[in-house]
Image (cartoon, rainbow, N blue to C red; front, side, top):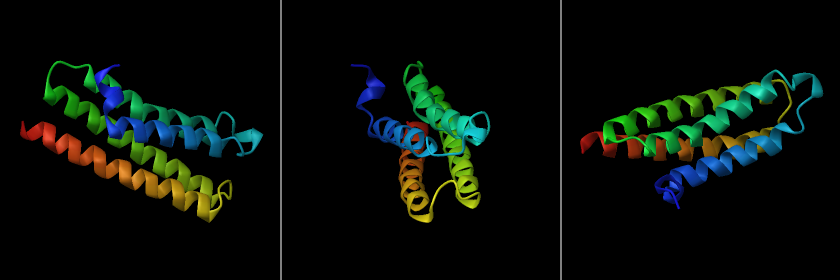
Length: 118
């Protein structure tokens, strides 16, 4: 098992990614290369940057990749909010995924701050 696979924040970001893929399956077919693609890419990028950062040689490098993951999380939130506004997502599904994003954001920020103090 790789180091990053043991991280709760990576596991939760993988759960979020899976949720985003499932939710975006119901987006209009005309959005396949639009918001569907964008929200999926940004969601995938969260866990991918955590994994890449874990493979770096210093905590400072790892923290930088957690910053990138946090940026991808914010991008995902923005895409999901647009999907809600366009009525591709209902309010309850948006709220559920938004709360998961908030939780992951707290984990990323806390972990990054711990790495920077070391």
